[in-house]
Picture 1 (cartoon, rainbow, N blue to C red):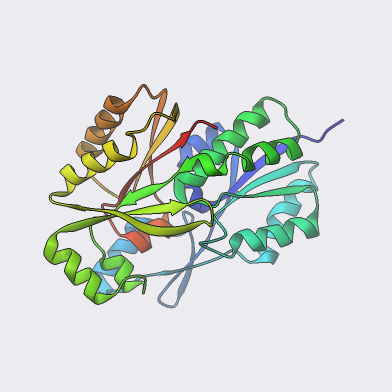
Picture 2 (cartoon, rainbow, N blue to C red; picture 1 turned 30 degrees about the vertical axis):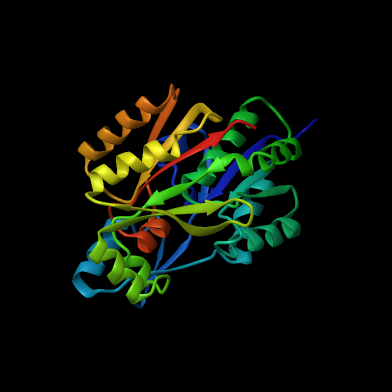
Length: 284
């Protein structure tokens, strides 16, 4: 008789408390260093705390991958309770967490690690796909195989209001930031699921609200979208803007579920406030 399957994920999946509870997802938090203090993503610090510290002290946090020993302890607790574990990790091109989780899984056994090759709710899409298969009673090995096959069909991107946080984090030159500010450019950052890296896509220009609407329409203007679910994930913006973006998404297609989630510390500290993305799957 097969063992029951437990679902876990890195805190970077950004699914929010309601979806995590609904699908019984166990989260392991990333490490966040702010000045001389150590925190856990979503547990002892949140994005608003990061922004407040930045406004007051101009200090940005550093995020660190979860180490092998921490993953081992996390997985072993569930395996010793009799579970097989399916774990969705942050993409290998963005962090060593996937490699560390894989090493821990080999040591503990009965753990299947899925490299999302993605971030935020780009990996969250895969978490929901795994949850669907767990609910259907599939064994862990089959779930892992089927979900890994869906990686290329998950699409993640964000449009940024400012390059300031990327610049402060060493991911953007001062010249590029100054040029973007002068030209009022709002760059779109896209994830490449072939290698799990990020690249700059289209550069939008103008007022943020209009840029967001055009960005959403550009992303969803395709005929192969899976309309079961879509995420609007943001790093902090107004309810008015979120309702407007939901209306735009609805206008772009008959989505069954439109989820709105707040990005955690990892996305927020690199992209800054007012970042917003639309994340979805295409048909396999």
